[in-house]
Image (tube, rainbow, N blue to C red; front, top):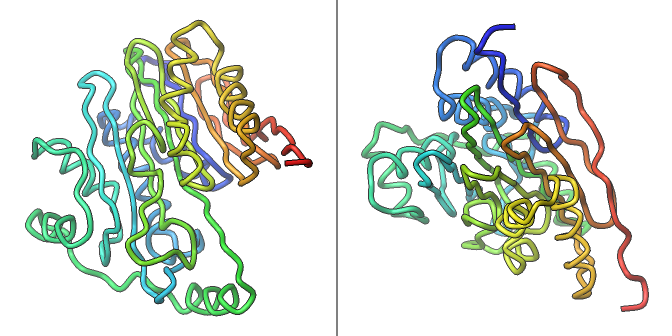
Length: 288
């Protein structure tokens, strides 16, 4: 096993396995860790079968897509993010441009779109026929869905990076912004400690600064698994019942995942394993 294989990647959901594999190939071919995060997430953003991220995602209440994404570099302790971005298939790539080319962290709406167009991104119709049919079905039955792609990467130099991308809750109000583009909520990295990322009901994750909370738990000596569990327990203690999930990875390559209400799959890629596992989950309090 060469130096290029001495890395670990963890991502949310089953589709995270494909994202991890592509990110690993980017690293093996000499790409940077930020390239790996961006390109790994691009694969999911461009997949029309993943109806919660990018192209083919489910639209908002008025029938159009608004995308959120963020990326963070541990060594630089810098981040970039976009919120309510329309007509751009790769919001994670726009987020990276914001991090690298501006003094800002987050651009939203028309400003984010204008920035993307100035930097060579092309407009594209992101609504597929399949997504439109599913949106109409959910609208009739008043169903909401949300599955974010979140990725954390520990490279061969023991530096930590993270990224998130999502189309948000289906049938959300126009202009609604979720946790995925909020640094400290949807993702967070401290290069001395590790990183965390979230999926699920963004409003609840934001209210607890979930990813930052996990990283700080690890700073206090908790394992990634314990750090995730403690945040879920805190949320339950405050009466939260909406579904949320977290993943975490520390500087030693140890990882963990926990969720509220039901388990969720997360993907691991390292020199030791390439697999999909299930999070440990905690039941809601029934009498609140």
